Length: 97
Image 1 (cartoon, rainbow, N blue to C red):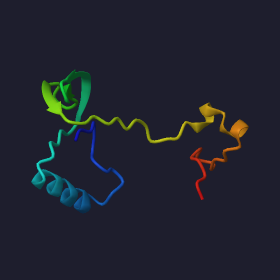
Image 2 (image 1 turned 90 degrees about the vertical axis):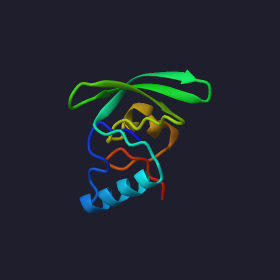
Image 3 (image 1 turned 180 degrees about the horizontal axis):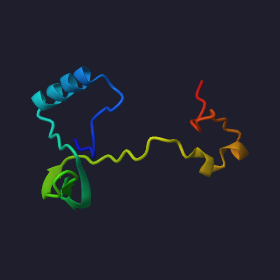
Image 4 (image 1 turned 120 degrees about the vertical axis):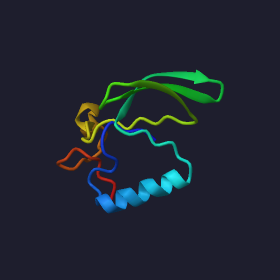
């Protein structure tokens, strides 16, 4: 699990510590303050080149899964949802209820 900054920024820091400790006990590979610079498929796994954002060091690691979560703001205004009849909140998130 990799992040460029703090995990779960808006969460209580004590809870974040507990969650990270639990993940470490489950042998989840936690890579902090880093970003992937390249990905390469290696059979059923993914080789990821990693750059640490604090000290600039570069490493390579192998992962089973890579999931990108990009951005904190909805950009649904670019999708022309109104034309499809899809309603959004003022914050541009899709109304689901």
